[in-house]
Image (cartoon, rainbow, N blue to C red):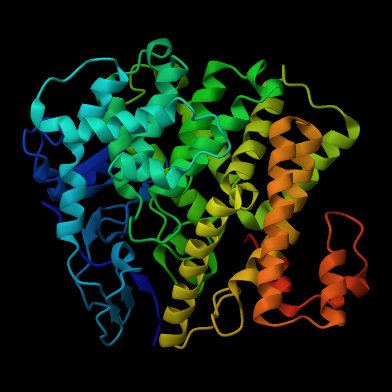
Length: 510
């Protein structure tokens, strides 16, 4: 039986007519044409998804995971009935729910309408917080409690450039709206709304849709992670070399890329999508599948909201550059980007007055922001480690249940959180941030490397408490310091779990 990864089918209002394929842009399928203008935010729950088309090849630019809409032919798109093919059907939106309902070939967590509706009803709080951010007071006594919480969030935003920023607390204070509030604040702080003449309603609608397209049930790849990456990106944009060189367009792209870099992440990795024959893997030919989907999803939302419709001369360029930034976060291309970065630094030929060099530095900054959790203070770093390990192990449990090969790092019986983190820090984080420290030798870089060393030592201590390491295991682990000069013998003697990271980096890109 062919195993394929399919989404649950949500019916569309009508088939997409043939002539639609010739138009360039985005189409939104929903039961309400006045989605955000309606007084009742419950109508948000009736939105059914969108597809963006490219008239050059008549294939979907992206497929939103809100419904199962498949590319059939050049004639049109049609929804697929459940049970038409012997696919493994898993609902991405409820993949990480704690209450899985067993069934032959189907995993579901039951309805999540109540939880989703509560989040959607908080749209009023989005509007309320926007009034506060713009300095407009609201005198309704019914919002006193909300104002108290938003007031605390506003105080936190005054320290948004601090590397100790607690994104978990900020998310609680914003009622789960950290990504919307953070991104809007930073764009407004840089004066980008006025500079690019952005419609505030369109921008707010775009950010709300971005936040809702992150899967809140994912332990790690959710809107809070996107908000955390956006805050880290802001810290890097403020570094002296970047602050005096980047243009307003660079800053806008950097912040938008950070906010959307994991948009609609399914909570499983690329190898899982490939080995289950997911249609996204086929659409993107097994190459940067997730990153391509994140980018195309972001482009689709930009077109759907018309955020840059008044800037036709630069809109397409911005979309392409947004894709270039998001695609750089593909972990399988880590060595490619790191090698290029190291070569530039060795030759001392980076010139930030050059647009292509500035864009490359933005790519490296986004890569650093995406995996900066081990460089945060221990209290924050440990929480992120627990969340990403939970997501890994949950994928492994699904693979075991369906008798699939368990992906590296996803087997809870063979891997521990501490060993996973030590391997990740050794092979991925340390080399990248060592080079970033060479490029930007500032107090922030020293702080990040300091936290990284302390956190690695803390995980090493916890691993020793769980299972004392023998001298043969401990010595090579300590010798895995940073970058280039590793002996084959040392790598050969490394504890097996640490080899998972190089395996991931060496995944074929075709």
